[in-house]
Length: 221
Image 1 (cartoon, rainbow, N blue to C red):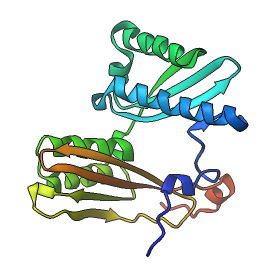
Image 2: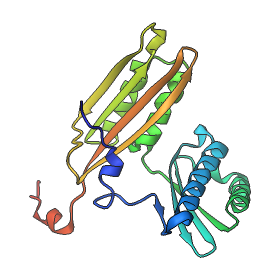
Image 3: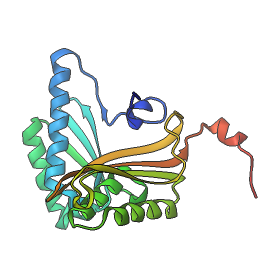
Image 4: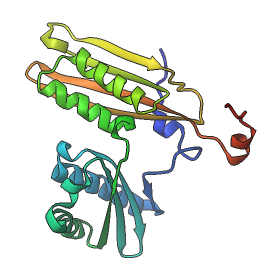
């Protein structure tokens, strides 16, 4: 049996940073950890899948929580004249009992973001678009956007089949064992009339090199 390791957790501290950045001990750590989960759940439920939220980063300071929301459609999260983000800030302040600051950042290339790609495929499956077509569209869009490799998996009662099965689409290379390989991974679920269909996406964006290693790379004309 193979031992599966999450591509993000495998690279934390090497080429990846933590999504929550704060320090606590004992019971306080458990309380803040559950509070982080509540913050993320509340933001995702409020924004819905249409907003295209990719990542939520949380930093804590004395009596203040700083939240950065990375999204493909910042206008939906911010709302008209900032009404949506203002209401969200007030709700999170009630939830945490601390002063809350929300910064909304735009994902420049959603085709290379595994979370957004998986969410897009799942939404297409819920609209009854053929899974093979949805997967191939995602693979082609990612490679056109500059990805060095992408792998997509769908598993469940695909196309309403009686038995669950798994299908893959793969293009380029996805080196999962290389620590400096910038591999983005995400999973999502599509709720269909035949049951839930799981979606997994791996996107390889190239190696993260140090300045010395980058200088040693041969120059190609």
